[in-house]
Length: 427
Image (cartoon, rainbow, N blue to C red; front, top):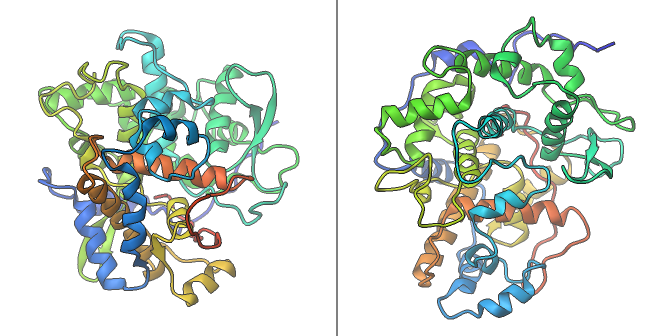
């Protein structure tokens, strides 16, 4: 009844033994090592450039005297690129508005079964949140998952890209498969490979299967087994409670990122480059950011339930999440500048291996560009707590919308070039 994914030998993108043997970063970082890593890689590769004038144009919309009323009128189209990020219309609470998201109950109650379920859902999605680009980009037979348009709708559609992962897990839950429970998906007896393949089955018109399915299987077994040890009690909530005990309820978002990378080898998005260990940490940071946003209190003055300490989450310590979609939109907005040779390779669909100079340069330049946007926003006097996390959330959403009919208006843009193609478990 169920098809079993083909077994592969040593994967070029997921060598579990190598990851486990890699040296851990220091326990405590005064600053996020992703920033200094990106600066080093950016200088060493010298391929992608940053247009500082475009950075300033993006940030100028958030000066203290901009008209919020006018911004709200324009908020349905991306004319004022970053006003929406800084206005009250785009906040951590925006996370709860996505129609496929599972939202935790309010107020926060760790004993509510729905709280644990939501957190397990977020954790598994972040564990598997990588490599959704398709060889059939823009074609109807690319990999997709057929499911509802929202939890409250009976209308179905074919979800592609990242949303295919979300739809597949939601569909499984609706079918009574406890796919988000670490005790379930860590067990090859309770949850055999064939069942996981069934969970990620493609829509009838798809000619592709889920990319890197064997790597996703391995990661599910790894992270599920770790969560089921005595320290964490078989849930992401248990992991978060262990984090709070470790930091006596004073831990920050960056502390949690460090705890994630220390604990789970498959979240350790780092490598040696030109004699130095560099960190990108896309999935660990987005896991923490999604945790922060999903539980962000309705009253912003209420302590965050995961980060109740005097410093709060200090979410501004996190960088953007270096993937393949945000660099694409940053280039479209003329914030990133590509040499003609790179544009040619992107248009030709040339694959870039994990750790190649082109791939590293694209990721590093994106991190630095969003840091500069944030710094410009602060320099403009914005009273909004500028956060690379929210800037990334908005840019990623904008990139998704631009795949449809929507267009950026009111500023000069470059033609949209294809996103870079790197098969990797890191993003």
